[in-house]
Image 1 (cartoon, rainbow, N blue to C red):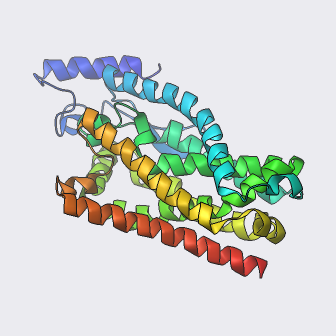
Image 2 (image 1 turned 90 degrees about the vertical axis):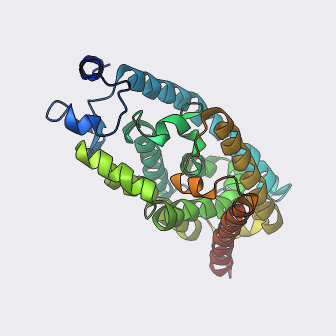
Length: 318
């Protein structure tokens, strides 16, 4: 709401300049130079809030936050459904509870904070960016990063409560390798695929010109997932609990099922928005061969990351 007066002024200036759309290239730099500001969030010492958004962009941001308020709690149920499938059947009744741990609480706090940054402090896209169109239907839930961060946050929060429930102890132990694989995927693929891509570099330049720390907040969001996964598996969980609850057959089946589910989501989103969630997907075009190769490669990588977490589990319990 605090941005609305500035946003209204921005729209008026756009129309005075004869622009057909407030998202036209270089408009923020040429027209709004010196009239917009970037501010920090109360829980993040980086400049992430830009005052130059139009009323339409502010409305889109509000819609996404309302959507997040609904979907984030829903993902708690989605986590439990996956955990019920991944865990060894029947182990919940006999599983011993984890001991209460300050380490588990610390991991949960960090994961929830990272998710909060992604929901409330990550710069909202403007109309001149493909991300604006890509997020028009389901917000940032079109990105695998949002799925992974939310599932990891729920995993670590429920791991804290597992100290008081044998059922939650079994489910969170059984999910540790899968959630770990997702954490590795978020961190490594972000720095290997997204950061070097031309669309991402263009977005960084655009936001840097607006005074927003887009690149820094992106690193802050994606970097913690891998170390959180490793610490959770090696130090927060017990070897006996992992041995009882983990099923490699069910875990790797879940990898393939989730890949298919996510693919269906982004294809359906593309049919409506005509935009892919990641700029590097634009290079694939309509070539079935390129898409098959890309999907196979990403699935193999996700399986590889889950396998590495499985090896960590075997090393821990040996």
